[in-house]
Picture 1 (spheres, helix red, strand yellow):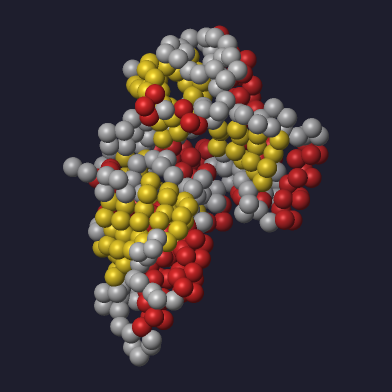
Picture 2: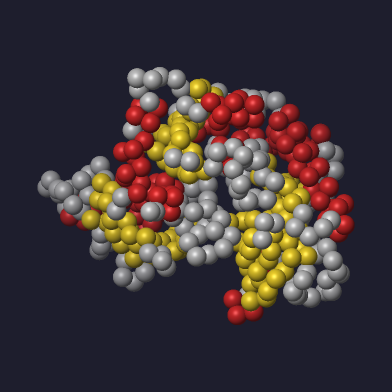
Length: 394
């Protein structure tokens, strides 16, 4: 069973999910009370239309500007006018948006009109209706949850769309799920009733501290306790996570960072080379346009086996480590992986199947696209927040 470790990293917090004494996830987040806008819902004003890139620039509180991709605007809540059928946005429109992505390098934060509230047990989407289940829930779990939901809500969730998350399957008492769902219903009902009468730049929903969101996005069966040496964080977690074991680490002789070798793991997560158990290694090169990963045999030795079988072994280890490194470093966009060339189509298919399975474990949408004629594997990963390395740039 894994552990979540939370320590101070200068003026921020470093969040680590450990499994088998290796970090599977590392994120930088602000202390509780920090000014984060990711996930907040605002009434924004359209400043400019950018027809060439099919987008719009919007203003939100504190004179901040965010980018809205118009291709994703299938449904809109406009406060200051009626939008005719097949109509389009125009400057000075006041629309309800949610901050969907952080600023990265020269790019501004980006917004979405798909309003979504994410909890530990369910996800509520403003547009749509009914309820759905996580694909990771088993058939018996779905059946039991379905019966319980219909007993509590005979007409289902008729106003909004709910997705029941994997964590709900581990609940013996479904009260936390229902409390979370009803809180989301109240938030969206209030929004529906008031958005046409509120002043521009109103914040309808301020997301809970980012740290809590990170924890709630981790499956409950992925860790058995949360450990921190920050008293402020300990108090927040104890108050907010009633059913989760939280421990305040207090040992002046051996700091928590030293106990879990945080500096060593950070150095690996920020470094260019990553060694594999077999003696091979990955070279990871982020660029402005994409992330490039090269697989090398390194110190690995064939030891009498056929070369092709040996190359397959290295590639399979590299596939597992590649998926872990993408989660660990939080790289997004287009990723190209140059595995060791193999002559057998069957071996290439084994590699792609294994890699796809490892990528599916990512909580952020990650897709294996294909292998090119040159043997380069193409991967895409959704951009949600900044890569780990950006917090350490000087």
